[in-house]
Amino acid sequence: MPDSSSSPTPTLPAVDDVIPFEPIAIVGVGMRAPGGIDSFASLWDTIVNQKSHHACLATDPRFLRRFNPEDFEAMFSVTPDARTTIHGNLLDETPGLDEEYFGISKRESAGMDVQLKLLLHVAHEALEDVGFTGIADGSAFDPATFGVFVGVATDDFSKARARYCRVLE
Image (tube, rainbow, N blue to C red; front, side, top):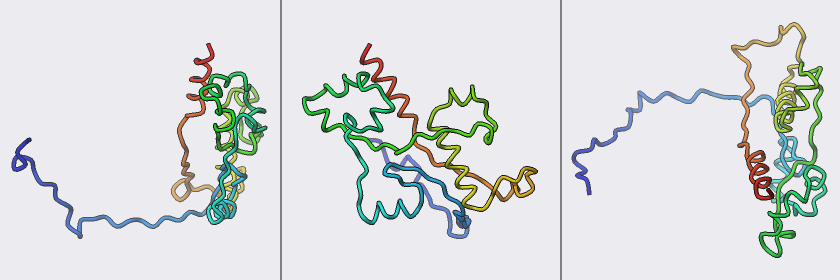
């Protein structure tokens, strides 16, 4: 065991040296989550009422509509009851995209990840929620006082899809 006297003891900064937290205001919000959650009100309803929005993947029409179930046979055949025990939380919709509004070509839109399209919609809703309507000349936009901060998860969807596709090869 190393001698503890040889390592320096960490010290905390003096109270006067601690920078106070800056105030922050969440002014506009846009969100999507399973179960039709698209606002603070629907999120709060889910939390207060302890709702679960998970569904059995093998029979959920949202899953069957988006994916070829045959591609997931390896996943469903892991255990005898996997068809009834493998669940997921799925969004109710897969958004389209108004390419002209967002300044994106149809070709680029066709190759975009659905999650990115969803992000554009949610960010736009957050801007609308705060009252920014996208004035064409940009006069309502001051980069010094304006920001969009995005909380996102990982790219687990693409990794999972690639993993399951390799299993089937």
